[in-house]
Length: 254
Image (cartoon, rainbow, N blue to C red; front, side):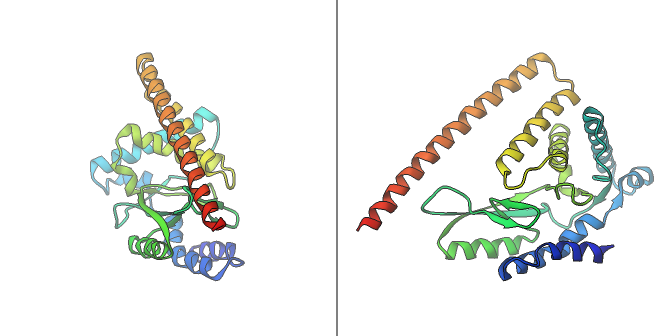
């Protein structure tokens, strides 16, 4: 089965450029492990192989998934039925790169999955090497750790130990968010996909934890404030990009 996964993933990218194929090949081994290994969550809970807190968190994740399926009357399959204990704090690391001439991330594109405004690495050192390479090529970069990700329903994602550091409410939100990606995901529309998954997750969290009207109101006010902040940031980004564009034009005229 592991060999089948490996052949499938690498065959997806066989027609891409050499550099991209090298990247994919380097990430494939860990990706295959993360969609094929793992211990049954039901067995972990029943046999008490792990500490009580871990078993409790895994039980709650099962409840969150069941709640999601009941709410939408949607059977998701075997996603989040197995658990993997990672040997690191985070599952992966994203490197976001941008030209100094425009505040806009460089998109990395892959067959089937589409384009993304970042490049992900399972190994922190690999992420640093790539970040330093982009810096040396004159790009502005940002590296951030990631606790969870989705294969968009292509494989049966595992629950990872990096999930368990979240509080109950944040853990529920994480599960609802990632499950939404497996149900609905538009190619090359990362911003829409993330906003949609956030919206669904926020709404389900309120219903799962049976928030009071006052708490819902406070959350609504907070969302409006965050929306205003986001709009302000976007307007400033557009303003800065216009200024950068005028500087580029001025340089060309000379």
